Length: 259
Ligand SMILES: Nc1ncnc2c1ncn2[C@@H]1O[C@H](COP(=O)(O)OP(=O)(O)O)[C@@H](O)[C@H]1O
Ligand SMILES: [Mg+2]
Image 1: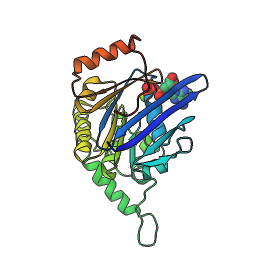
Image 2 (image 1 turned 60 degrees about the vertical axis):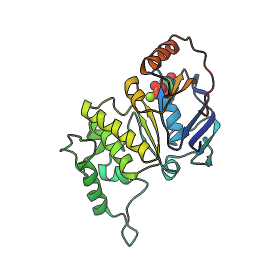
Image 3 (image 1 turned 135 degrees about the vertical axis):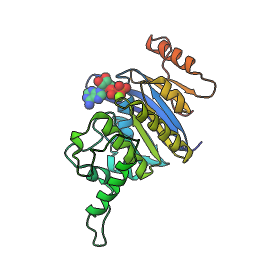
Image 4 (image 1 turned 120 degrees about the vertical axis):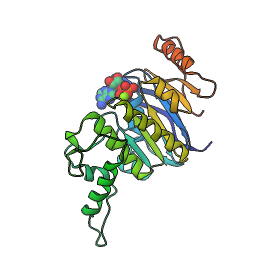
């Protein structure tokens, strides 16, 4: 298998808290991995390191075959390497209008090399018009991101991921604040990513949703990979059972890595 992401022996502490302890995680180039685990397990920390938001203390990382120092990785580099992330918290620049949020780090320029604001506004209007079936009539390119509701934020961030056609899409609890119809659209989006030959990390508390879209399940527990299971041969009931056993501390943790 070729890997979109190959992280090995990643550790990250916040003071006394070991958010990640020698974690290895790989994502196939056309694979959807469901990342599961209790609150505080370390899921968001792992994908923030991948997205360049948080620096790892130690470990190695390859993205689309390119070796990256996870202690020096940046958001800009992650974007250049085709990673689009919808974060659980604050995906959008709070004080900026939606149009500049969409194009930050990859502005459209006119023939003189200046940012083409009119073009960015126009594209933003198009994206807002047809993402996720959001009831977003009050959303305009000029709307300040900080005024959006949780669901609107997630919708806009996902719309951005769809528009830029990224090779690796990371969704961290994308459906928490969404209506049923919007959830359906997010799940369709994940299936679309898969059909397009791309890769996705899907983090959710909702085991049903994860089971429905993922090719493989990776369960994080107290900063370690507890289990790595293919979808093939794993029913929803089994997945729920094994998660309960892990929550009860019954399954020994072991480092993850390649499927
Ligand atoms: N910026 C931070 N400062 C201090 N502790 C943090 C920070 N981010 C995460 N943590 C801690 O690291 C652990 C893992 O958190 P997180 O990765 O957000 O878990 P999850 O996304 O699985 O709920 C938790 O104990 C959390 O409190
Ligand atoms: Mg989280």
